[in-house]
Image 1: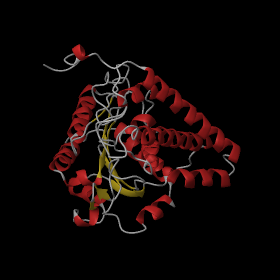
Image 2: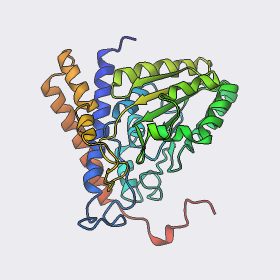
Image 3: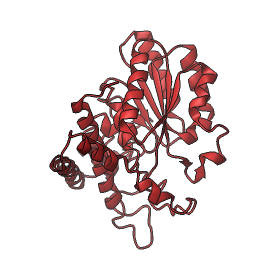
Length: 328
């Protein structure tokens, strides 16, 4: 697949936007929480799972999706939602627990829902897969030109929901694409200690599903693999599985001591930062200049700053609203 110049630049812009937003969160999150780490303190309370280093996966996949294509995310959901085109202000306000957030402040960062973009996520491992299968089944029954995509981590592949979902998707030939964001560790457990196969792409053959393992740090490789899988699903040819091997440049969660990592692993991953490498490639190919990269970085930083300011200025829900917008 030959990737047009404008697509390459858009992929870089999307990755830069994801990184800028998460860098902001990584700073704001610690306000009021230190020196003794207090998870409930500060303007963004609760757990926080960031995905710096995994931007290429979200950008490469979502570049092929439309607003009406349903997507289920993981507990590390910011990348796919931003890549799908979320309103950054509403997303930031949700993190801050404000009324102007995507879910009126009820969900926080792990439970982001955007009905306009048909996006949902949650904190239960592998739980988004059956929901994506249900969405794909509805699409098929309605004979719609849509595709359901499920993002999962490599740890979720060992859950029963993964196997049940793939079996039904293959049996019913559903328009589903499963994207495994393989960042090598399920919390602190390395894949080698939890998974019997070297590549989870091997599991696709058990269900007769086309599957491929790709370099999840290479946004063009992700874009090309996702393009084939999504086009196949739109043609009514059934599900596909993509395993994108990547790294997270921060801990599993903010506050993670990361004592489980081998010495030097983090430095090695930082040397393979997908945004830095892709930016260098685009400059080498004459698609972007140093000034272009600086302008994109400044633009995304400005958008994120506006989103942060909006979130900080927004009102918290009143106590009396605690039982609104929930199922009784």
